[in-house]
Length: 162
Image (tube, rainbow, N blue to C red; front, side, top):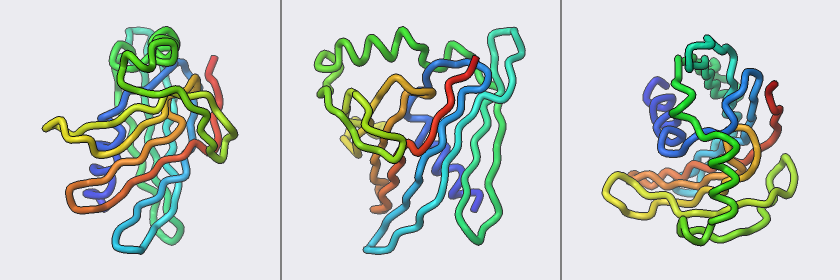
C-alpha cells in the first residue's frame, strides 16, 4: 500500500497546486483501472496549516472502502504551488501552453478549463489534465503508467480557503 501512496503522490507531483490558502480543500473521485478492472476511492488534498514563513502544511488522504486510509502531511513551500494569477494565466493563454479551452463535467459541476497533455520524464504524452479556477487548480486528470494502470481524478467537492 505504501507503493500505492507513493504512486498516487507521484501522479500529483507531476502537476502543480493552486491558490495556496489555509483551508483550501479538494476531494476527488480517484479511479485506478487496469485490464478491465477498476478500483474507485477518494483522493483529498488540503492545506491544513500555514507557518507564516512561506510554507504550508499540505495533507493528502487516499481512501478506498475496506482499506485503511493512507494519510500524509508535508511541509510545502508556497512558491512550489500555483497561485490564482498562474491559474488565470494558464486559462487565458491555454493554446500557448499546448492546451485547448473546454468545459469539463466532473462530479463538482461543469467547469471552464484548459485541457493540456501531461508528459512523463522522457517527454512522452501519458495523459491529460484539465486546469480550472479551483483549489489546487485540478478539475480532472487522466494518466496511464508504463505498467498500463490508468489513474483518473475527477473533482468531487472543493472549498476555497481564507
